[in-house]
Amino acid sequence: MFARADDGTNVLKRANYVVAVGAVLVLVLTLLNLPAPAAARLKLAVGGFFLPLFGLVGTAQSFVDRASYSLLPRSALIAELQRLEQENASLRLAAAQGADALAENNRLRAQLGALPHGPWKFRLAHVVGRDASTWWRTVLVDYGTRDGAQINQTLLTPDGLVGRISAVRFSHSQVSLIGDAECGVAVKVAETNDHGVIKGSQSTTDAGVAELTMLQSSPQVMAGQSVVTSGLGGVFPKGLPVGTILDTRPGAGGLFTTGRIRLGAHLNRLDEVWILTP
Image (cartoon, rainbow, N blue to C red; front, side, top):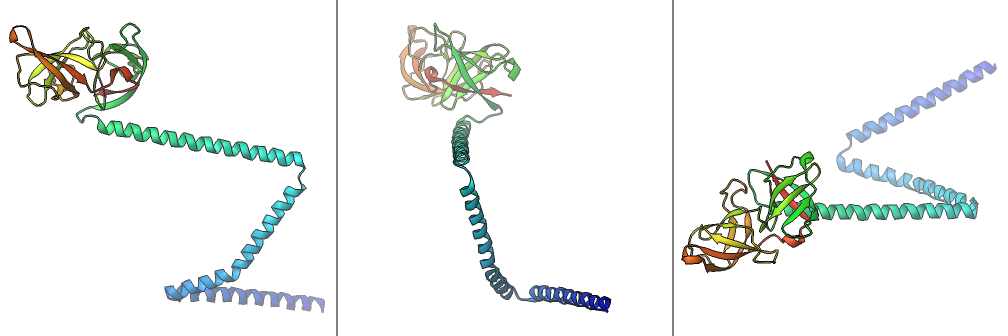
């Protein structure tokens, strides 16, 4: 007799299970066949029905969290507060570092975009030393043979030509700046196409000024005109900006013209330079 009762109970449970599964299938099929607007409204209604239950669960969880904290001893709460403060400080530091890195990246991108275009690539280097006796004539950069440094590689900033590599070591290189005796630069006046040469001179102590000698008498060369590299001599590529003419004067016998150039690059404030690489 008891066996029959259990059998009847099992049959009833299976029947209820089948009915429930059938109801779910009918609901799914109904949802699949409903138009999009009607299906959206039905989903909203079902969500609204269960939303109070979700809120109740969240409230209960919050209550449990508060109750667990209230049961902790004061020392544990202080330790937890200190941990959270340290974590917050670490997050603020990481955010500040990320902002600094982004600003640095944007600044270098702007510099790179302002550099002359040509069949070369650029590599950033940092000035790590200066000649103590002639501090604006030569500098050291953190670019050496390990990085592919070679004699006569050109250095510049977005404002203009800086100089060339005159000596290389494993981890750094010496750079002869414009105005140094080892850094003659063949140039031309962009407006007149008159050619000249910048050579080392001790006649000026201004790091931003260099002496220019024109290859022939050029009365049309005047203050304010632009000076660029001519490409002659095979060291500096053609067309790199050098500076602007400050003044001119006739040379000995009137056979050539001399003058001064206000350099575009600030040689006495160099921190970063860009190196032309093949």
